[in-house]
Length: 169
Image (cartoon, rainbow, N blue to C red; front, side):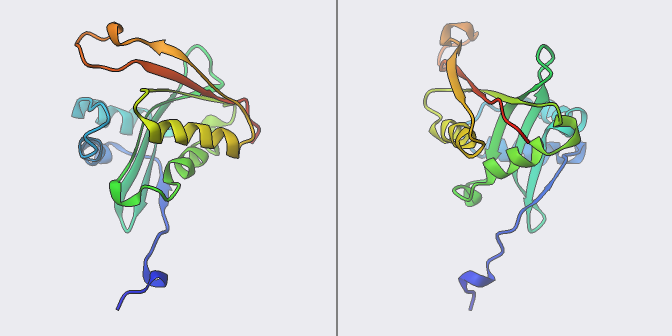
């Protein structure tokens, strides 16, 4: 008989590598919510942007992923492209844990802000960034960024810019 005490909830965090690309693509595809980019793009994220991206594993399986990069115009800003958490792991604070792990990396030592675009209907991501700001005792500014008419096809929501910071490490 399995008890609550027997259930393993520990996560292992690491830099992604190109071998993770297809698993990450499938993880994002399975959400049926996030914009699914090409499989090639996830290979690139996991290889080229590994210093500013992260995977979370539990029992050897990838259950979370954040793709991010240092903003080329404001190098003190980590731009978060996508955050995904496997449905079985939601509600455990995994998104926040991954962000905090990223901020502690050498590649992010000069980062004072996190930026991300979030659609108005994506309440979990809104909560993630607002909650992070609260935990880091800093601001979360929200502003208009991309409008639905900016996208080439109908049906894409507006994207709001969330800016968390400045924060101290």
